[in-house]
Image (cartoon, rainbow, N blue to C red; front, side, top):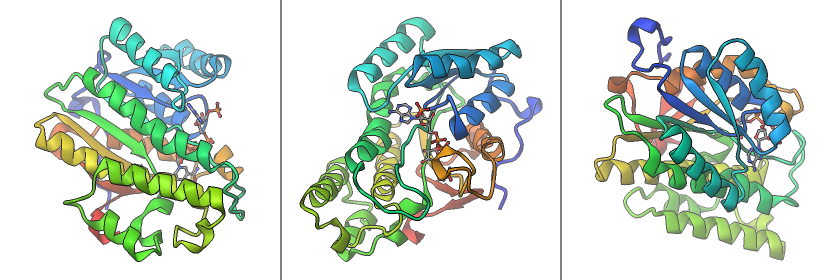
Amino acid sequence: MDHAKEPSPTRAWWSRDTVAVVTGANRGIGHSVAARLAEHGLTVVLTARDGERGEAAAAPLRDRGLAVVFRRLDVSDPASVAAFAAWLRDTVGGLDILVNNAAVSFNEIDTNSVEHAETVLNTNFYGTKLLTEALLPLFRRSPATSRILNISSQLGLLNKVRNPSLRRLLLDEETLTEGKIEAMVSQFLAQVKDGTWAENGWPKVWTDYAVSKLAVNAYTRVLARRLQSGGERVSVNCFCPGFTRTDMTKGWGKRTAEEVADFGARLALLPPGELPTGTFFKWRTPQLYSKL
Ligand code: NDP
């Protein structure tokens, strides 16, 4: 199902005053999404953890006349997140779209080491959460509805979890909380430390990365509910681009970062009346979490 139609100037709710922040945007999917949003005419804050790499990625877009500003942001560093939020508030004045894209994996396609599990969880889950919470007060909550798009992965879907009590915890929409999600992550990291993680029913492929995306997916659902019940005009959804040819996959994959960005930008720009919240887009198909 092609849920999101091509954004066109006639359907555009955005303008050059609309601000999109993209993390990890110096290369790969993040870079392509940042470029695509700028091509649609938005102002894009292209962020990267490295100043030189970020500026080198932003400059060619600016040379094309696109409204692209570079700012350094390491999502795994609380000081960097706080400094970025303060800069965004004081210099730009706020934002309308946040694309949480930055992530790491240290495995080859066919390996499953958890040597870097802590960095993977700190970046992919805690980094996403930290930045989201820091920027939530800065969303402009315009009539068009502010939106957060978390670039996630189907490796972190519930159907990959083999531990029944973990599945029950994640499936119980009514009782799931951010605290329980963080407790799950701590439990995984403790099992990595004591060497018992392999026998505890976690996802089998890229386990540390999959747990980080499991946590992102669950956090997205909990946050969507929290924002909705508080009457906030901020939607939050997940998007799995599928197997994509980037550095993360050492160039393997079925589609390019540009193809992913075409559709990712469409999702980020869905007209207000068509924008869901708490939805997981498995490539182009919106899924109900309870069916995953
Ligand atoms: P890449 O490895 O090509 O790019 C990752 C980006 O994240 C880089 O810009 C990297 O910066 C940045 N990054 C890493 N750590 C941090 C940090 N602490 N702070 C800020 N930026 C950071 O990966 P992809 O483009 O493939 O992945 C993009 C997103 O898509 C990720 O969320 C990934 O999980 C997801 N995804 C990718 C799939 C695929 O097949 N490629 C499939 C499913 C999901 P630097 O250059 O400094 O390292």
